[in-house]
Structures are given as C-alpha cells and as structure tokens.
Image (cartoon, rainbow, N blue to C red; front, side):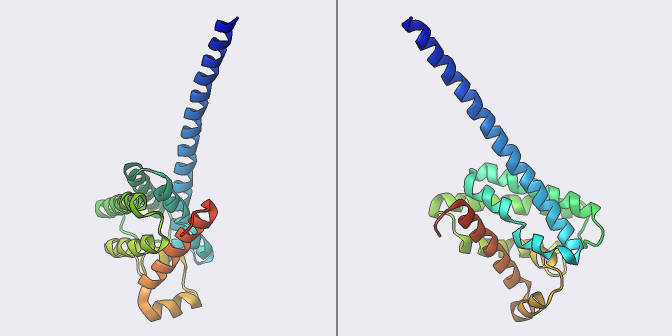
Length: 195
C-alpha cells in the first residue's frame, strides 16, 4: 500500500514538472507574440498619424523581456523584435525606412544588443527606467542611418502639437527618452517593481 502511494506521488511530481515546462513554453510564446504585435504596431504607427498612442506603449514587451529574461535570451528577443519591425515596416506604406541588407542588419542587431545589455544591467543594478531610457537614446542614434526623419519613437507619434513643442526644445532625442521612460515605468507599475 505504501509503495503505491509513493508511486502516485512520484507520478504527480513528474506531471507537475511537465506542466511547469508547458507553462514556460506558454510564457515564451506569449512574449514572442507580444513582441511581434508590438513591432507591427510600431510600424503601423510610423506610417499612420492616427496611431500615435501605439508608439507610447510599443516598447512594453521589449522592456518586459529585459526585466524577466537572461541577457542572452533578452538579446534574442530584441533581435526578434527588430526583425519583426523590419518585416512589418517593409510591408506598410508610408514608412520611410531603408529596406536593404543594412536596414535589416541594423534593426536586428541594435535592438538585440540593447535588450541583451539592458538585461545584463538589470541583473546588476535592478530594473531602472531612467538608465534604460538613456540607453534607448543610444538606440535612436544608432538607427539614424535607417532614414527615419525623427527617430523611431518620434516617428510613431505623428506630427502632433506636443511633439513639435518637445522636438523644437531638444529634438527627437528628448521625445525618445520620455517615451522610453514612460514604457519602462509602465513595466515597473504593471509588474509591481519598485524604481
């Protein structure tokens, strides 16, 4: 009788491990889906002035990947996001983006490096919206050869009054910093991380 109970406990533990494995797979698939939807949303917002709100929250999955993944996994997630952005921007009309090999390489490598380094920084000092937003400014400078007039984040916000006022004060760099900071702070609030 006792050996039967021990066997049932062992089977339950194995099933629990399998379910936990599926849970990890489901979480990874959900994050990959969120990254793809975010990249497509950013491309659509860059081509349309009516979707500026998407640019304000378009980096949430990228910052979530920085927060929860290891640096190598986060780097792969950032590269995946960049490839999805390149593919979506190539198909959406109205986006002035280089659609050659250099454009593909920049959009795959730069976000991948950013998320990998951001995840490494997060492991050392904690999730810091300020430092991640400063890092995003470097991403904007690195993506400048793509031909985006105001940078990636400012291009998603359209040509509204607030963008013109902020842009005239410090250029698209300030806009990119503020939008990236807003996204990182939202990840903190939604995941209840203190910053």
